[in-house]
Structures are given as structure tokens and as C-alpha cells.
Length: 422
Image 1 (cartoon, rainbow, N blue to C red):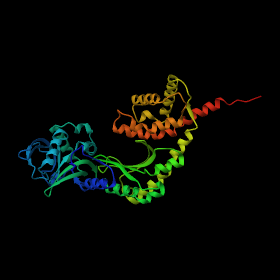
Image 2: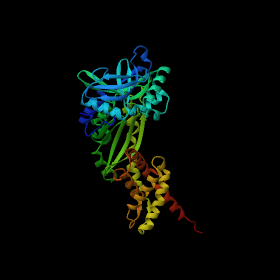
Image 3: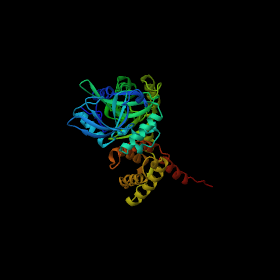
Image 4: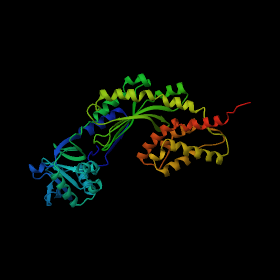
């Protein structure tokens, strides 16, 4: 079983059954706990502590209290700490990352380094200051906590053992934050995979893949049987409609719903919308109709546009060097139109231009359709990009077929041929 308290925890898999198990595991270990930053008035040992050392053999943590600036020992059998293999992993990780403990109302919490951004926001300081793993950091934070008393909501996950729990903070929010369990995400996903979706795709969806980390959960639902209908209706092979659902139960992001098309093994985003984690938005009754209204009607736009692009020639048949030069000039203009460099670096944009241009054989004319299909299959084929860059590329590639330059080039050529006779 995964150690849910490690910063780099990740659960991946395929299928609804495994997704239910994974979300059940993460939801059962997560809670949002309100605390007062000046609870030390009633609980003298509350506050922030710097982790100095860990004696594994005797199960003792040596810490330095941020307020009192005194060294003290904490036994792992007390103060909401547990002793065992998984607890050892958490403590060792803390010694190499945050080196921070928080204590509220007598309960001790380890602090993930991924919580630094939201903690810094609550303290009104720069997040980089929290990465200085020295006792002076916690002396400074202790003063702020006492001076600026407020209510925080800690987003924590817990590790249970022998009726005891070990807690770790992954985000620190204001008292207005509303925690939304990932069980809601599961409900929405189950609906998208139910027979109700046959009205749109003629078959229920399937959970093709999911990934759960402390920051994000992403679920890809595909409708493979709909690919047959797309092939019959539009003559387009290997085009599968998909929906990607993403959120964060630690408050790192809103609910994000994306309509995608899968070509080969690549995904391209054709539309999306997001909803914040707030009362009226965070329920099944509100989100499901929004998916139907905002995403479903737009799936036909891409296949219809691809059929249109078959009629437009971008580069006529010519020698390779001539064709490549013309293609690079066209791609430069098209990339600028869809704001490529606002999402990826200039160096990446130039390299993609070159790779696309090199992939064509210019013995025959290259149509706008050929270029569009090349981009739709690009995200899975390209290497050397980070995971976040691939996500950006999926969105950019979904915009390529709709770029005005894909058809305007041809209209300009047509206009040059128009003339008047006497």
C-alpha cells in the first residue's frame, strides 16, 4: 500500500474499479481542520517546531521550539506521532525537505514542502523564505503567528496505525476555504461512464487512465466505440472523443473539465471550462449539466473543420528544400496566431517548427488537413518536454485546425488570380 504522507506519493491506474479504490483511499485519509494560530495561549506546547534530529532506535525526535527557542525531545509514541516503517519514511523525508512541525491543540503535524506556498500566503511572506531550513526561520514564523492571530484551515492527510494517527499538512488555507472531497470527482466520473452517455457517444465511457498526487487528480475518460461512428460519418480514422477531469483536494486548482480528441496516442484539447471550489459550484447537480451544455455540443466542431481543411493546399508539390522553407515560413505565422510562445518557450517553438517541417515529403502537395493531423498526433510523439509542457502542447495542438491562417493562405492566393476583362 502507498505511503500517503510522502510528498512524491502518486497513484496511477486504469479502470473504474481501481479508480474507486484509489479515491476511497485518498479521501479517507484527508480532512480539513480549522486551527487558531494563537492556540498556544491555552495550549503551551502549541506552535511551530524545527526538526533537528531523529533517533530511530529510541523513537525520539529532537526539535527546537520556535516561540521558546528551546531544544526538546518528542517521543514518537506520543503527540500524534507513531513509530513504524512508514512513519520512519515520513520523518526521514521531513529531515531532507521542510524540517517543520506544527502543533495545534496538542496534535502534532508534519509539514510538506508543497504546503509552503499557501503557508507563505497566510504569513504574508515570500515562499522562498520557508525553504531556508534553519531554526531562525521558525523563530520568525512563531512571532508572526502570535502577532497576527487568525484562523487557518489545514488540509491534512493521515497515516493510521494501532488506533493512532500521524498527520501531515499539504496546504494552509483561510477560514473561508471549503474542502471538497474527491468522492465528488468519482461521482461525476461514474456518470460519464454510465449508459446515460450513450445519447452522445452511443456507448458508456471507460476510465483509460488516472493519476492522483497531493497536488492534482486527473482522470481521462475515453469513448472508444464512438471512434467507429466518427469514421463512418466523417471518414476520419483513429479519432476518439475523450473527457479529462482534473481537480485538487488540497486547493491547488479548481475543477477543470476538458473536451479532447485522441488521435493515435496523442490528446488534443478542443474546449474546456473550470469551476472554483465554492458552495454552489461544488456539487454533482451543478457540474454535470455544465459538462453537457459547455463541452458536449463542441465535439463535432473538430471533425467538421478537418473535412473543410482537406480543400486547402498550403505547400504545392516541390523539391524538399523549397517545400521545407515554405512550410517553416507558414508554421511561423500560424504559431504566432495561436500564441505558441505564450505557453511554451521560443526555443521549443522553433524546434517544433523544424520537426514538423522535416516530417513531410514534399513530392506531393501538403494540405491544411495534413498539417492539422500532424499536430493532433504530436503530443505523444515528441520527446524532451516536461509533463506540464506536454499539457500545454495538447491545448495548442487542439487550436491548430481552427487557426485562420490554415485557410487564409489559400484565400490570398485565390484573390491574386482574380482579374477583370475588357
